[in-house]
Amino acid sequence: MSTTLRILVVAAAIASAAAVAGTARAADWFWSPGLCKSRLHQFGMQINDGRTFGVEQSFCIGRGGTVHCEWTSASHVKRLYDRFLVIARSSDGVVRRFDLIPTGKLNYRATGIKSLGHADSAARFNTIVVRLATVAAQTEQQKGCAPPSP
Image (tube, rainbow, N blue to C red):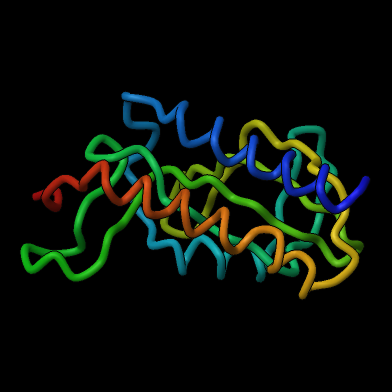
């Protein structure tokens, strides 16, 4: 897949995922984007058919606005989310996009896993995805965040 085509595929995936944020809460567990990334890098992802893939690099973008986001405290220190758009690269270079939903304090599941192509190196992955992930994160942050749960 050519570099330009890869960039367009990733851009389209991020744009469509950002536009489809649901309105109902999927879980009672809210994570930081850092915890999302940490869990993926430590444990990888299991596909519904039982296959797994490791995650070497990832971008976890919290999404959904006030329905899926809340602050850690009344002082609004850090946003927590119950849905994430994830763009991940495995050690074999395969780049995937999926929605991650925390299902417990340390557990999670994914929906909509799609292969976006191949990034030959970590640097190439960052070059292609970092700007797009930044724009997607800024768009999501503009949607706001609800006060913390009691």
